[in-house]
Image (cartoon, rainbow, N blue to C red):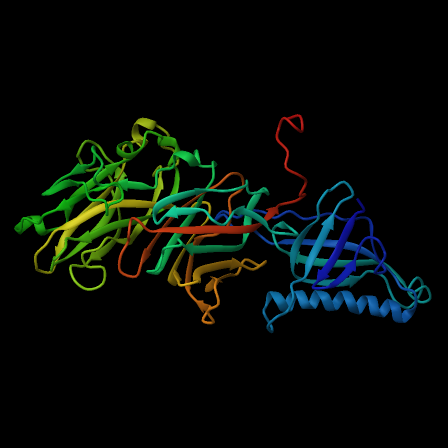
Length: 486
């Protein structure tokens, strides 16, 4: 394979290596930079200098070559600063002689510097500049020239903490860039889903197969207290069971523990739950209730009923009237880290990590509080939340949420028509990335979604997406330790 090094913008390409554009990299003139990761996990941009020789066929040709490279670098700066709309990106393309596939890195800005005088050879006469620096500021990563599919269409997951496994391993050595991700309805979803959460899970923090997304309060060993009882046989609950608090009045109406679920209550795979997770509370006021309840999440290590150092999450109101009254609904109640401290590796302690629901009466009235589950959405390796969407089928029309990121990692979200002939096919929707990127290797998607006024356990959704693999330095091909002799 011939070595390639070029600047490209749309259909324009300036060869920096082979002299076809009258530029040549000087011997040892390109020492690629490498991005450094900052303490917060983000990456510094790369600043690097490419030393060039410019070979003009005439004075006018030399001037044209200089103008051309300075213009494309100016366009890179205009795109990075969004000086005006629809400015194509500028990329640095590279492919070494023994590299099977090309790669590219987004250029944010650049400038040239001439290291020789113009009033004499080799410029006048000669029309040659034999020492010119081109300084670039570019994206921290290289990425593939084409997007790869990671999860194909036609795969469904439950909207109450369901999971899907990727159709192919995610390539690269740093998180990939999502090209497009669709959250689409089941074929029978005529009542629209309006809100959804999706999180990525690889094997980096534990075996993805054993990640437990639902911590249900009706589990046999869950601790129920202060007039809270276990109810079974209700198919509207995730596992057909839930916890019910029946207020007794007086002091019992104050904020008190109602249901506590330890990790060991829901899974024996203790080391496969690690990471940072968004916690969604699935709860409702009982049918016909007129009182509102205030609920909060606590997290910490449970020690046989005695209080430990609990971390308090967000308080939410579960209404007895109005929107979602009497129906299951998801309420975001905060984030948890498992384990709580990185230094805690004792399985005997970690398995006692617990999530607790505390509740109180908020105002007056009648009725009970019913608690189904805490649903965990992993956010450590990439996750997103959309709201204000319309994910449904209507006749032959299918409406989906569509999310994408641009090469400079700007995020956008729309509601779009994915099949059918309707004309009202695009609108903006709210999109909140908790963290963004696609983890490398084999992955699993954990998802949850709900309608405008309820979370229905029988609802399903589709998720499919493609991405651009990314690398810090050389691309290479996918090899194992055995294949390369390690």
